[in-house]
Structures are given as structure tokens and as C-alpha cells.
Amino acid sequence: MLELKDLYFTVPDNNNGNAGKRNIIDGINFTFEKGKFYAITGPNGSGKTSLAKLIMGINPISQGRIIFEGRDISTLSITDRSKSGIAYSFQQPARFKGITFRDLLSIATGITDEKKLLEIVLRVGICPLSFLDKEIDAKLSGGEIKKIELATTIAANPKLAIYDEPDTGIDLWTIGPMVNLLKKELAEHSTTTLVVSHNRVFLEAADIILIVDKGRLVYTGDLKNSLPLLENLSVCTYHSSCEGEKDAGCLR
Amino acid sequence: MLDALDKKLLKTVADLEDLPKGAYNIRKNGKLMHRQKSANIDIETNADGTGIIVTIKPGTKNESVHIPVILSQAGLYDVVYNSFIIGDHAEVTIIAGCGIHCGTSEPEGHAGIHDFQVGKKARITYVEKHYATGEGRGRRSLNPTTKVFLAEGASAEMELTQIGGVDEANRLNEAILEAGSLLVVTERVLTDGEQNAVSTNNIVLKGAGSRANMISRSVMRGNSKQTFYATMEALNKCFGHIECDAIIMDNGTNETMPSLKAKHPDAELTHEASIGKIASDQLTKLMSLGLTYDQAVNRIIQGFLK
Image (tube, rainbow over all chains, first blue to last red; front, side, top):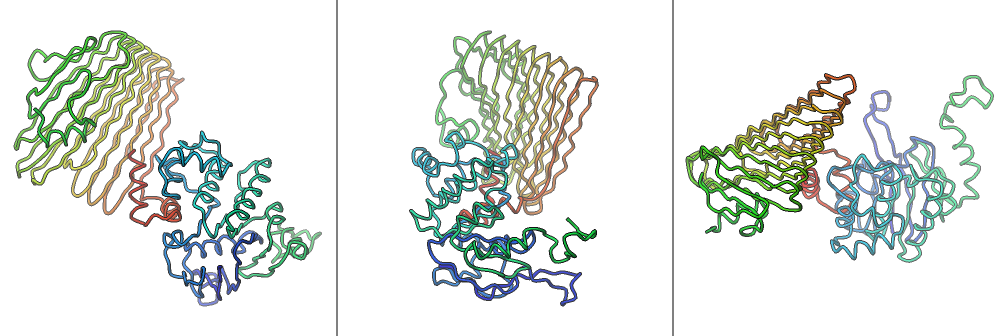
């Protein structure tokens, strides 16, 4: 349902001899299948979020193509990608002044009717009904805003849901129910689910693990076979300059 | 009687479809048009005939008074002095506002000087909206002044809004707070084109335990300019906060000068101010929910000025 073809995201970089450019995403090819749960993981700065943003159109692609349900969406705006059925849950959701959860839900679903909005909040389940008139402002805690972000994404009934680190700021007791919620949505609506995460709970829930390192896909497959590589990558984010566990120059 | 234009202006500035229930005083082109008193709310013309005195009996609960002004006479600059005397323990809503319709090239304007004496433990909500419209090119100016005195334990929540179409605005808000009183002022100003608005606010926290919160939301479109001065002066153990946010669109400009003066060692005064364009993460978020760029801008501004 989603094909990434020879995808590049290149930014200017004066410290790089390569004509002053750097590839944040460095030639990714992959096909996502409908109704599957994908977890994208990899070290900090490896390009996970950049890849997710390329799919949503938040980052412009430098080279390559994105095909969504047979249609080339490479040059479509964020708005048009949203209208074609892609939803995006931000790692650091925007905070507003004078905009409530109700407003976001109405924009995402086109529904303004009070009863129907309450039904949606109930169905999604992660936010109490009292959240409906909460302003999405600086007063919300990190956990509250992430729950609202997740609920808004689910409420839009997307064909493809992208969640960037959905567990940031979420308490330990909510992560399990959150995973179950994503699985339930997938089972009931065949929502293709793409989660960027380091959290083992999401990796265990996924059908397919994608490991990104230095802008490239270095592994795709099940969790079991990814473990040796994950172990190697996750131990240290300075693995590229690692000189050994017991070396005094360790940067950790 | 109210004509169609009067009704449109009244709807915009006072949310009135027709003559309101309860007490009201409607002034049109510098003259009294309609007035109604209630058992607890008295409205009289002041001694020199330049405005009204609204007297609210102590203990009055859940009543409202509307005092809109409408202007549609070319060349008129209407100045009005209104006084509000709110009795102890009363709880009332006062809705004021000025709507200008300018149909010619002659200037029109209004200066409303509103003076509030809020009695002990009384609570008022004051809503004031300013709006100008019309196909004429005459300059429309609105220069409102509010002066508030809050007695012990009194509270006032004031919403001051200038919606649009006003070429020149010079706003002045002053308040003195006695012990245990509370003032919350929210000012929202939208300017466009070549419009200019200046807002000056002086709040004196005089009594122990008094609290004040001044919130300003400004949006500058076109080449418009806004200047915001807010001074909070603490003379006692008290709490005061100024929050001023300005969004610049197009080529608008803004100057914001919050000023805090603690003249008592236990005073707590804070301020936060920001000026800038709409944050890109807000636009991206709303576009990811399906709004176009322009729809997202409008939705953010609408919320910001809500």
C-alpha cells in the first residue's frame, strides 16, 4: 500500500566534503503492506523521524518516489496526503492558544456534533471525556498531550497511521493499553500502522521491524532475528566511534 | 426603532439580535436611542449630559446591562463619560461596545470613558467590543478608556476586543486593586492595512493579597502596527502577571513593553511576552489533519483571538 522507491533526503552540510551536502535518508527502498504493524527503530539521529516526515510530506523528498495505494504522492502537500488517508502523530505535538481537543477532533473528523465527538473519545478510550474541552496549550503535561495526539490520529480513521515515538512522556501503565489500542485499530480497520520507537513493547507488537542506521535500512524482518543487530546498535549511540567496552575513551 | 444597519452593528459588538432583556442603554450618533432600567439597575444621564451613570444595587445577582454605542453619522466624533457604581456583593455582567459604520470620506470616531467603582466582594464581568465597517474611506477612530477601582474582595473580569476596521485606536486601561481583590483583563486586538493601535495599561496592586492577570493577544495583518504598554505596580504583598503575545502576519509590526514595579518586598510579579509569526509546528499539525495552509492560518488566528 506504500512504496518507498530509492528515497533520499539531502540537506546542506558545510562540514561535509561531498559538495557540502549530507544524506539524512540515503536511498531507502521498501514496500509496506496493508494492515501490517511496522516498527521503525535505530540509534538517535539515524533518520527514523526524517523518514516518517518524508512519508507525511513534512520533509520534502530530494530524490526518489513515494507511491501510496498506487498513486505517486511524492509532490503532494501535507494537506493532500492527509486527505488521501495518511495520519501523523508527532513526537513533540504542537501547542496552541485557544484551540481545544474538541477543535482538533472536529478538524480531523469533520464532526462537530457533541454526542458524536464524545462517542469518538469513548471509542478511542485513551483520553477521559473531560479532556474534550482542554486547551492544547503549554499547561498540558507531556503525557496528556501525547494521549490527545494519539486519539486525534486514530479518530481520523486513516489508512496509514504514523506514530513518532508515541510513548514519549507516557507513564509505564499506559504503554501496554496504548499498544493494544493500536493493534485493535489495526484488526478492526486494517490500519497500516507505522511506529517509530525504541520501546521494546512496540517492537514486540510489530509484525515487521525496520532498523535504520545512518539514513539506510540495515534490517527488515522479525524481532527475533533483529536482536543481535539491535543489541549492537542500542548499547551505545556512539557506536560509530566506539573503541571497545573497556576503553577509557568511551563516550558513553 | 432599530434599522437593519443598527441591528448589524449591535449584533457584532454586543451579540444582540434586537433590544435586549434586562437593563440597557443604546446610544446612536451621540444621542440616547433606547433605555430601560430594571428593579436593581438604574441608568440615569449624568449631570452635564455627557454620558450615563449606571447604579447597581448591592446584592444584585445574575443580571446584565447592555450599553452599546452605534455611529453612522459622517464627521461625528462622539465622546461619552459613563460611570458604573456596583454595590457590595453584586454579581453582574456589563456588555459595552461601539460599532461604527462609515459611509463617506469624512472621519468618524468614538471615545468612551468608562469608570467602574466595584463594591466590596462584588463581581463583574465586563465585555467590550469595537468594530468598524462601511464602504466610506473616512478614518474611523476609537479611543476607549476604562478606569477600574476594586474595593476589598471585589473581582472584575474584563474582555476588551477590537475586531477590525478601526484605523486609529488609542486604548487606556487603568485599575487600582484593594486588599483581596482580583482583576483579569484580556485584550484582543486585530489590525490590518495601515491601521494603528496603541494600548496603555496601568495596574496598581494596592491592597494585600490582591491579584491581577493582564493578557494581551495581538494580530497585525497588512502594514498595521500595534504598540502595547503594560505596567504593573505592586504596593503590597500581592501577585501580578502580564502575558502578551503578538502574531505578525504580512508586514505588520509590534512593540511590546511590559513593565513590573515591585514596591513591596513580598510582591510577586511575572511577565511573559512573545512576538513572532505563527509557529510552523502549529501550521504543520493542522495541515496534517487536512486543513490547507490558509485554513490552518485562519484557525490558529481564530483560536488565538477567541
